Length: 421
Image 1: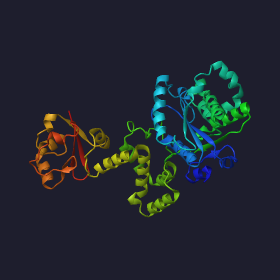
Image 2: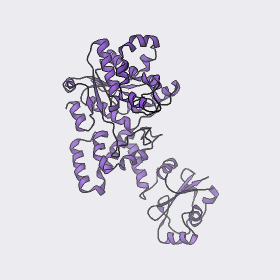
Image 3: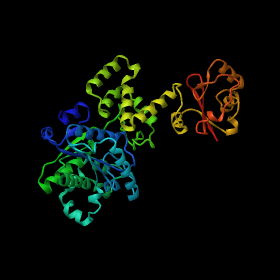
Image 4: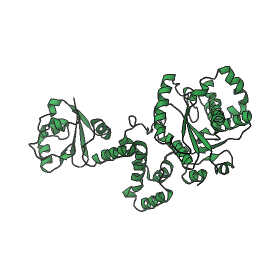
């Protein structure tokens, strides 16, 4: 299938700079997308671009992922209402390495005929002198066109304005496209719809300096049905690094997708065949309470990002909330699972070797020992999701998870987290 058709079918196509692009893509081409190292981990918003590169590679094209080691020190003003905090070189280097790790999970760098490639624009922009850059590159940019960019106009109309540092970003990204056109014979740049101006600036620079053709393809900015984008600045970033977003939280984020979003997200974020998605849509329409489409989305996303082990961990953590075993889970994971559950802090002596009636009372789960006794007699008190067998039961050190945590529960959903000091 032509990759443009595939992207349209999956809701991953916004626009292209030439109607000739589908014809061009009937033969193998080289395409690139850039990733901004503003964090040491990519997030779900970036995953859309990763999926586009994956689709290009699956359709037989060579893909290049560019990490902006140089441009990351400037900051892309596209879609931003205020200037980003400038990062120092050490932070950018650390973030770049984190992004390299992220990308290596999703792109095939060992493909037998079209291996993916990772590049860093610091390799060419870092050595470029300011005066030389202005003479060689800057003279090909016209102020009218640069000032007419939507991102520039919006910022100039606002209170924060725009610094020359940000204003120059479009020249740097345009030069990246020129450099990859020369080095790798890359003829296509893909990016979010907010990158249209930067992409067309690169195409024009290539035409002026090389007299060669280049193309751009943009992808919709993926939002939920409330118009909320995925991203760090929007406060709903789901990072691809488990140290920033746990497997459980990642799984739960997609499991809790709105009904109006779930089928679209399956098309955009996964490689589930469209026929299967259509079947999921029909089942969701008939039996929305089963949440089959939501579960499939959460499973596919968590497996792709965190592997089978990560998915198993996320599912086990989810099961804990429904009373399943906590075996194998660490205190850190349980703290994430029960982040919104009432908690208290008790000393080790308040807990270890103490009768469960006393611990339930001290924790605040029960108002009196009599309440705790009746709860146990009715089979409604649980320690670490195991039903308390009798009023004589005591809490042992082996019950204390990682030496610092107990989970008490009364009934089906009334949890109390006990932190052991």
